[in-house]
Amino acid sequence: MSEKSDFLYPRSRYYGKFTPENLAFDANLQEFTQKVNFICGLETGGKISPEEAYQEIKSLWKDLKKTKKQLRIGEIPNETE
Image (tube, rainbow, N blue to C red; front, top):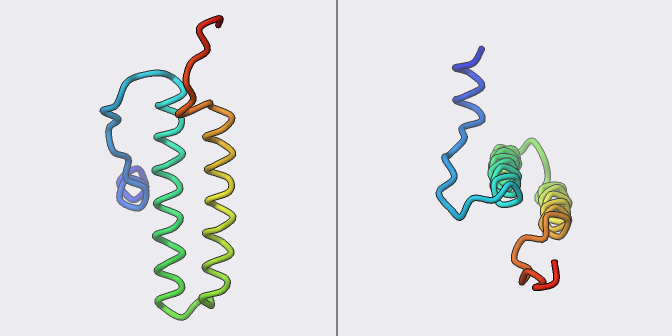
């Protein structure tokens, strides 16, 4: 079962500046890309319409942006903190 999971949901190693927030965002970003890949495959295969694919990807993008904001990725650290 692990081999199947590793094949379907591969994880790449994180090489950026380590912080718990960056690591969590990287995991979320990898999950986002996998889901987008599956949605594209379903649309290409005719299983879902282009509009459905667009709406699904748009929803995933909004979730990723929300996560980025919650983790404060890309913000300049406040010197008083």
